[in-house]
Length: 451
Ligand SMILES: Cc1ncc(COP(=O)(O)O)c(C=O)c1O
Image (cartoon, rainbow, N blue to C red):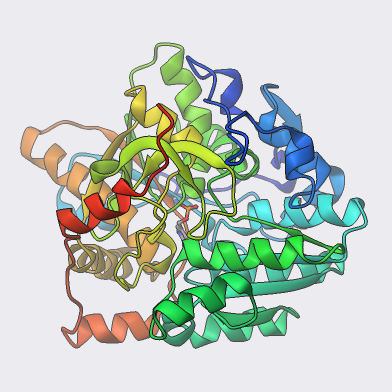
């Protein structure tokens, strides 16, 4: 009998993260200061981020050592299992072999603590007392609250208002781990007040919540800001997923032909994909597919341009695929995928033709999640359902062509706090959104001209 789950011992928790920047065909375009139009330096970022994270952001080193204290916390749930989705394969009658890396085992239930723990550790080491952040679905906010509680830091979370209402149990998790949570836009910050004045019923967006969290950190000398995705140091910390998966695939005696993940800001996908992407850059034939919502089609309909990371233009300018910083996506249930931009490193890989994107409707993703839950037993987060849909679509293509491909996808989190969304799905109340082209054009027209 082939093993269903491929498990690694605790001693196999990787000792170094992998940095794709060392292997990208071209260096990433510099991050630009919006005031000067010049590349930013470490001093510009010091009011916002811990020093060591700033160094990691620009590091070109291929391997970055994981501190012992971080590995000790990782040991609570890592190494995570690699699972052969035999039930799903049978259901689909596909000759494809489907594997998923199960990141739902962490205490908050997703991949997000892989970087939350590292960020909390470096901030604590530097003497920071309080961390601020934004959260969409609440996965990141709960992960940071979890990490802060372990390193004895205070945690302030601005949670996108529509998710705050849809996912009350995520808020409870954050509060249980000692986090302080406010729905965003809030009246606690200049940025929030400005948005509320223009639109009192604004459902919020990640871009707005980021503005609030950055402002709160900048105005408090004991605080720093943390971001759960997009930035290079986040992708670096998440590489632990792919590094473990690489070893597990070897144990399974297999090797992926297609590597799939869902993308919001890009971190869970980068985490799984980047360690494998280095083999593609070295000449190995592997396809990389990043799945995004059609309601927030950053890579499929956005432009590769310099843009702000937040709505009120507090962050530096990053070159990335973007729908424009003023883009407010509809309140789809995959709250963590509602971000106007995409990690600059993922964007560069897409631009270089290394990664392809696919855009999916939410109902077809919930259908995939239901099939997955019925065949593999685990209820996926709505975000994760995009990866499952894309994997199923690949497996169905294999059924049609008879190809015996090996498909690997990232199971970024469970959906046990998303049952309200599943209730709506089961009641047939979920709608598909196709974002109108004029609205996208409108938001893109507000992008700064950088050449
Ligand atoms: C379970 C899960 N998967 C995926 C994402 C998308 O984020 P990212 O693209 O950074 O992995 C989120 C974001 O909140 C999430 O909670």
